[in-house]
Image (tube, rainbow, N blue to C red; front, side):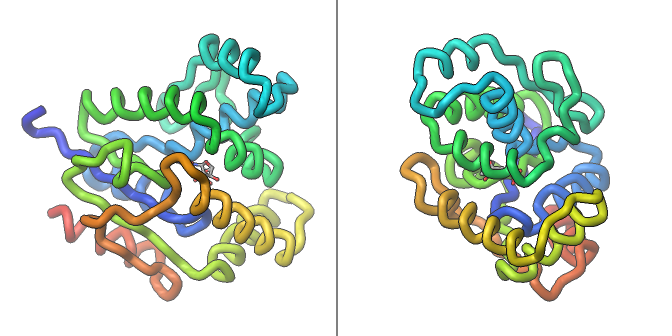
Length: 216
Ligand code: DC
């Protein structure tokens, strides 16, 4: 384990975790693991296969038969790149729903822990510092107001040509926040030893600089 560093970046949806973590990974020359993408991939597969959350038998069979990996920044579900398919408002909701299921969390947390054992990583999500990599060397908790996060997500979606209203995006963000914070299993909480960064009035570059400075 000597020489390996693990960096956990948690926080609510739309706080800029992925953008920041990806950039920090590039600066430090380490791997980036987007755990939200893993929940999205499972949510996507459940929808594709029409599996209801309470259909334990089919859910468990599907999980046993599912392979999730990352390669060159792409998320690979059963051998297929699904980057674009998992970034829609429907899949955001599906991911949040499936992330409350114990079988789904058990499978993904296992994969995430083994990814964090082999080499230095920066991993972003909701429960990385509080659960997945409890002994991570560095932990950050990235926040921003719901309005600011909705504004960023709205711009991102409209740039991609999605037909959504700002109010819809804000309502989705608030609903997802509530679900992520109140679920029974590994809810979104700040680890006691995490450094909190409120990015409401900071640029992405400023957030990246603060994290890199803390580590160096
Ligand atoms: O970060 P994101 O929006 O891509 O995450 C999608 C959903 O996955 C989010 O609603 C909560 C869930 N999630 C989780 O429960 N635990 C994680 N470590 C990462 C994401």
